[in-house]
Image (cartoon, rainbow, N blue to C red; front, side, top):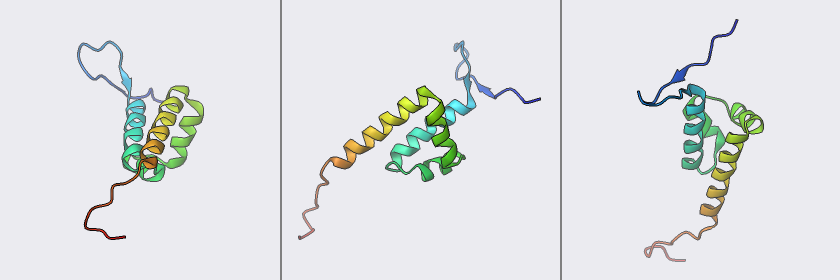
Length: 90
């Protein structure tokens, strides 16, 4: 027999409980962006494996959509030219 997933209620007024796993995936996406798209580092910060994160992206359409949006956001940021400080000579 398996235990029911833990639920976290964010406020007293909130009717719906948010599964703890869902909060980890939201945190994973935040860390993924902070780490410039490095899934290994992002997963390690939230306490899961990189494989688990990619598994979730394959099987959860909502997460897959958010994951793709995060990848697109990172790609746009990486395409922008970096400013060269004035003290650097080329």
